[in-house]
Image 1 (spheres, protein in one colour):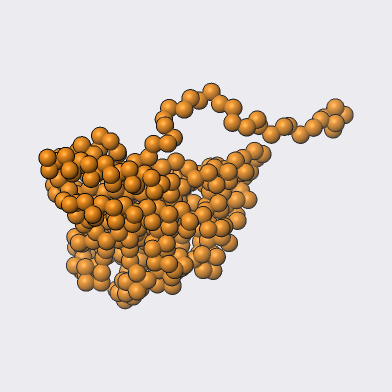
Image 2: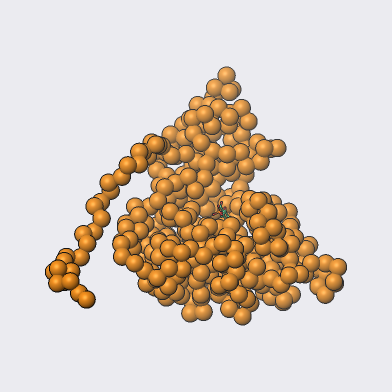
Length: 373
Ligand SMILES: Cc1ncc(COP(=O)(O)O)c(C=O)c1O
C-alpha cells in the first residue's frame, strides 16, 4: 500500500560535490618522464565519470553507456566492429589472444612485445599460449621476420602459429605505416594466421600517421585489436575490438574467465565515450607526441646524448653516460630501458607541458656539463 507521504516525497538530492575524508598525498604539479601511466585522469574524463554516476544501471555491460559504445566504435573502425570493454591492457591481450587461438595455437610476436616482456607470463600462464618471439631492431615485425617463426604448419610436434601479434605504436615508440600493416596482414592471412594488434597506444599512432584509426587497422586487415585508454587519460580501461568476427570464439566467456568483466562497466564505457565521441583521444595523443618531439629536439643538441629510435609516438629512447642518468633520476623520474646498454626511455603524456620538457632538457644539459667537468 502506498503511503501518501511517499507520493509527496521529493526524489533524493544528488550527492554533495567533492566532500571527502581522503587527504591529498602528492603534489599535483610534479610530473616526470617515467611512463604515460604515471599521469592522472584527464579532466574531461573525470567529468564523464561524474555524469555517469548516480542512479542504478544494469551491471556487467547491460547499461546505457556500454550500449552506446558499439555505435561509437563502429564510427571509428567500421560496421563490423564489436567492442568488449576490459580493465587493463594485459587483460585485453590475454582475452583477445585466447579468442583467436586453439589449445595448440601459438602467437608470433616481437621479442620486445609487452605480451612477452611485461605481462608476468600471463599469456602463457593465464591464456595457456605459446609465444614464438623474434628479435627486431625497432620493435616492428615484417613478413620476413614473421617467417622466422611461422613454420611447421601441420607438424604435430610444433605449436601451430595461428596469430601474429603486433604492437602499435611499438614498445620502442616506432609506428607501423598502413602499408606495413597491410603487408603483414596479407602475409599472415595467406598462411591461415590471424593478426592481433596491441593498441595500448593506438591513438598515438593515428596522431603520428595523420590518418583515421581504420586506415591502419580495419582497412589494413587487422582481425582483432585492443584500444588503449589508460595511457591516453582514462582512469582505467581498454577495449578489445573485434574486426573479423569469424576469427574469434567465445570472447564474452573468455573475458569473464580472464577476470576482465567489470560489474560497474558503465564507468569504463563512459570514459571511452568521453574519449571517442569528440576528438579528445586525438588531441591528447597528438599533444603527448608533440611533447616527445620537443624533447627529442632539445636533447639531440646535447653533446654525448644519442637518440636511439625514431620518435614516432610519445616516447624518446636515448643512450647517455650511466652516471649522468643516475644523477638526473634524482631530479626527474624516468627508467632505464636496457640496463646492459644504459639506454633510457622518456615518456610524455597528455598532461606533459612544454615547461616540463624544457626544464628536463636543461637539467640534462647541466648534468652532462658537470660530468665533463
Ligand atoms: C604495449 C603495451 N601493451 C599493453 C600494456 C598494458 O598494460 P596494463 O596491463 O598495465 O594496462 C602496456 C602498458 O604498459 C603497453 O605498453
